[in-house]
Image 1 (cartoon, rainbow, N blue to C red):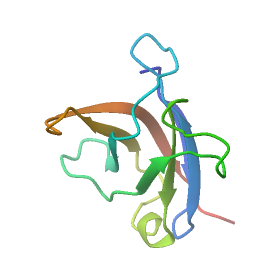
Image 2 (image 1 turned 180 degrees about the vertical axis):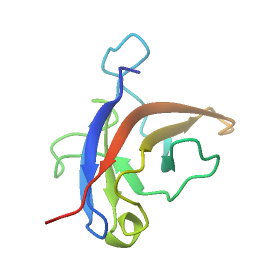
Image 3 (image 1 turned 60 degrees about the horizontal axis):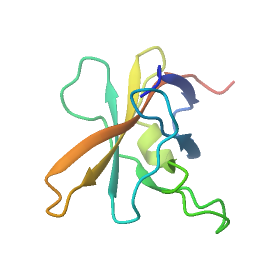
Length: 119
């Protein structure tokens, strides 16, 4: 994975976020349609996620598959972002579950989250 990028979330506001995934050598990655995606937001230092936003392949309105391009879309609901606090560090992790028996899970994206208040 590449060095984490930073995104901004506002408490109580929904956001759909397209994410380009990279491998450890910072190359764009491609995956398989059958891979199961999950995402989690962690407050730095916490063992359990604060919440798990929705995640799926980014199809760009049906113009691509998403998995061939290594692109996912993470969807944060207003209820989920209402739980985060400005000034505290958070991280977004996106994982894929692969393997015929689903026994292997690996991170495919990592982003730092800045939480700000809307003025």
